[in-house]
Image (cartoon, rainbow, N blue to C red; front, side, top):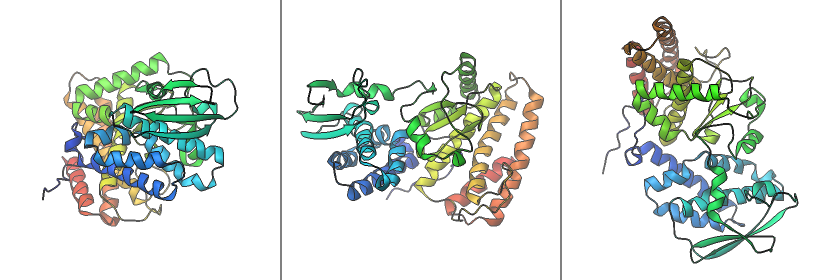
Length: 384
């Protein structure tokens, strides 16, 4: 039996999905969630059962292409409210899952499909079909799969749409102000959770876009392995209007970094990108195997927040700041980087905060072997 190596968890993720057991287990976690949904809600979800069968026969790369996407996590999260949805909301949720899960199997990994017919009644805004949104009445969609070719008939008028065209709205630039699921996410994330009222910015200014591009290039030049992790694990950087948190991420849309549309120095943008990408990576690691068993009671002082925090949050903070500390140390080694005094100040500040955070974890946390190993590595990095 092959032994899985869960060591070196601080290092950036492997580019090869076949070498990244954590990401593979994350895909399997999503398959399990889809199985539970299908078992509980069989009505009009035959396509989901078919998709699960296909996923079981996919390799790790194919599962990753379809399943480790922000919309899949959001769709799974939305199911928690399924019983309280009205019929239109239920139909829309089922239709969106069909579009953004099942169709991906056809058009991204070229899965062979059986013949079938499905009917949906959805609002025009959810169709992603040009020319069909002027009339705001519900539209009946007939989906026909025949001889492995899918067509869509709208309101029995024989308007046929190629399924490939329905993938286009989900494709956005890496740095963007627009993702098709933004409104759905804001609807399930309360302002208290986000600590702000969130709205997507109308346009990403050229200045801010260039700053983020420079920050990504700085990461690539300074720590290429970390750049590769961002490039392969982050789907989009999505901008929202100020005021609000400078950056944040959320497992409900895993693979996304949200950024407030405000100008910042390139080095600080690079720091925050590493910070949020590292939250995403630790979420992947902790979905694969548990690290910390303490409950979520916010009773501990955090070096990074004014309010009391659960140990889980402090553990996350230690992980991401260890990586940021390593980044600043690499910057210090690069003599072509300006602002050496500022970098030294940041290194001293982060080290002091990490010593406090790791002391709290070591004194109070109930850790798994993976958690103990990671804390040991974090302590060594801080003291190195």
